[in-house]
Length: 228
Image 1 (cartoon, rainbow, N blue to C red):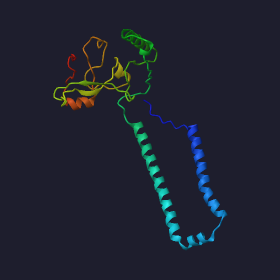
Image 2 (image 1 turned 135 degrees about the horizontal axis):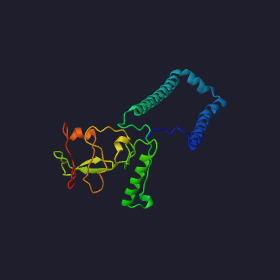
Image 3 (image 1 turned 90 degrees about the horizontal axis):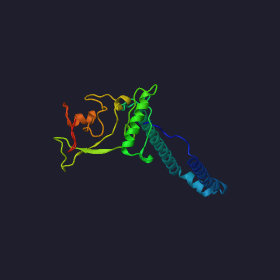
Image 4 (image 1 turned 120 degrees about the vertical axis):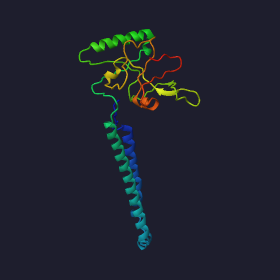
């Protein structure tokens, strides 16, 4: 997922800001102009006799402007630091040179068997194309914003209400980890034998393994499913 900032100027927002600036200048400049056109010596002399009141008001306005400007500068600095930090964080995969295409066969009326056959032929053609090192399929990409959830029941980690533990998952095809250059720390990658009708298999994250099976290689499966 690309992290991008849309910094273009919207014409409507620009016109509104320009009109507001002009209106503000006219309103706040009109009052002093009208006052200057009808001089009244009594208020002038009164203000001159009370310099402390005008000075305090002016100082308060200056302090308010400086405080507001400082707050905006600090906020902008924190935002830029977050952007820089986000750009340098290791996402756990290598997107360099990876080309992504989104395909939805449901809108074309494909049945499930026809969809599987289409994807099988697509992967064969992509993997045979010149310059392609690896190709795979995934229901969702890392950091794409989408999510799919399911419940798993793990021995020793039963929820108080008897429900399973909610986990997010992505359905992928073989070579998914090689395509995104995601290292496998334990176990094996998905293969051609992992197809419809075969025992369900899964690759879990390192954080899930540390939480539920610290220092051990075990398996979790929903009731009725056959672990591999």
